[in-house]
Amino acid sequence: MGINRDIFNAIKDVLWDYRCYEGEIKEFLITRWGFLRRQTKAISIVEKIMTDHGKKELLQHVVELARVEQGIRKLEPWARDHVVHALLSFLLGIHINEDFLKPSGCAVEPFQWKLAGLLHDIGYPVPIGQGIIDPYTNTINRIKGDIGAKRPDVFFKVIPVGFDQLSNGVKSLDLIQGHLNNWGLEIDASSEYENMIKSGRVCHGIISSLSVLYIIDLLYDKYNPDRKYHAIYDPSGMNWNQSCFENDVVPACSAIFVHNLPDRCFTTARLDRNRAPLAFLLRLSDCLQDWQRPSADNPRGIPNSKFKINIDGDRLVFSVADEDRRNKIKSEIESSLLAPDVEVC
Image (cartoon, rainbow, N blue to C red; front, side):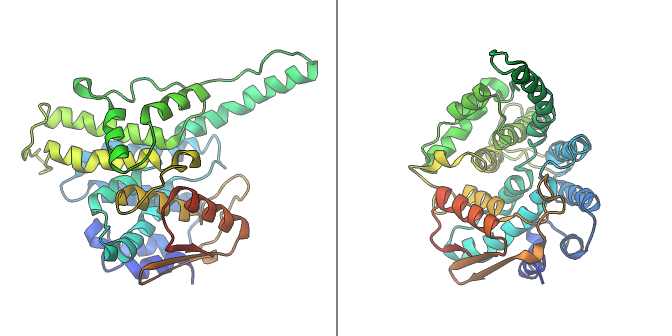
């Protein structure tokens, strides 16, 4: 029995709190499918979770971005999966939230977790696109070396424009920075964004964060352009109170922003569940979910039978059969999270 069944057994009684259908989630976790079918099913489930029960227009446009990676994989088929991964890490996070964080008083609100857990990697098609370009410039640089030329290497830069600008002159990075400060992190959001641009290498966490915030801000322009702090319902029954934007959407996007930042960003202050439970949960779940992820070096991905999770009281024990993966996961957790009660073995 693998970790997928362990997760299902642990969360089946609380799935409806997250607007998940038990039968559908069981089928996704337990059934042996080929990867493409599993990926298509994952997109369908994500779309249903995010648009069901009066929230259809809130995120149906954001969910469309999940389909982009599925299409671009036809050009680079062995880019590491982030679609199935998003759903698996979301389901893993439900288990951690309910059985590890909640007993200690650090539980994450389900709607915030849906936003962060399911959408944290929607910006990944951008670095995939860069990966498609790399062989072209690498070939030119190799030819240059063969000829013996001393010119600098050629390369392309991806420069995002407009992603950080919201309506009414509001800058998304300023909103995110407020939460990073509240979480006790010594991270400058604007500096990380500028460093990303200067390096020419896109951080998919930063792009995912800004993309989700940008699209939801567009919808607020439509339904609550004056950003009033009271209930404003659209025809589907969705409430567009500005408080929801500030209390749910911005924190979720802030968690997405930090989930893929390098370890150096946490040298002086790691993520603490007591101050930043949502960001803590996202980084932990994202780090632990490493099974059934096809990549160039492992086209089938590591079977879920090679992983186990056990939450016993106030301790989380995560077992990984592959030594290299185990050491990598352990290092990532120790360098970015304040989590002495999380054991990777």
